[in-house]
Image (cartoon, rainbow, N blue to C red; front, side):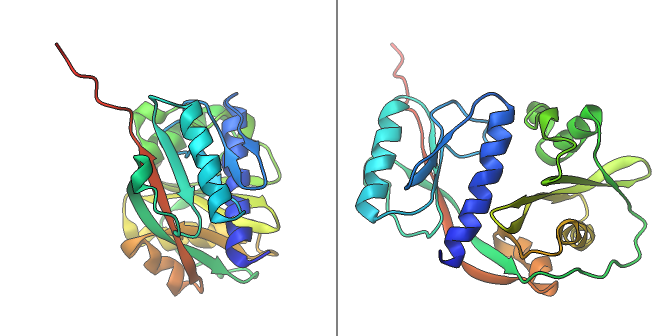
Length: 237
């Protein structure tokens, strides 16, 4: 398995666990992780896992047909496909990130770091990360699991930054990094890496958000692209 295949397997495992906990489970095939349910906007309907280009396109066509008239979001882990002719538009591109196993030194900060342990804390984390409209996007079923670590950072008692570390497919996937003050991001990345420091860490970011990862020893290792197919506009009259 090539490195990007490993990274997307970790990412798909996380999305599968998160959506299954919401009672909208997807399924794994040789080509896609796919989910025909209506998804929260932070999750795709499909992660491309492998297969040939023709197999990938056929699987995407079948998923789009199953969701005819509804939004379809597809994550192309290798940024190889052009789905424009199928009615999709590129939503964003990002770089895959990878760091060899090993802990990171913690540095002094005025932040108070904590592991989220309660449903109330998880809801507060979600609001700080995604906004009030997605307050329930993470199920409390995802708490108290040895393979998922929720890390929040407080300042003056308020959550101002956070991150999720997910151990899956032999990797530590870093997700949901947010910080009101960008200078705090490195503290959260360090904490996430150290949650499962005995395995390599990975994730993806774009633009300036990549910088704190590079400073901490991550390297970019390929690109991904997310495509979105919007429902047709209903004509009035």
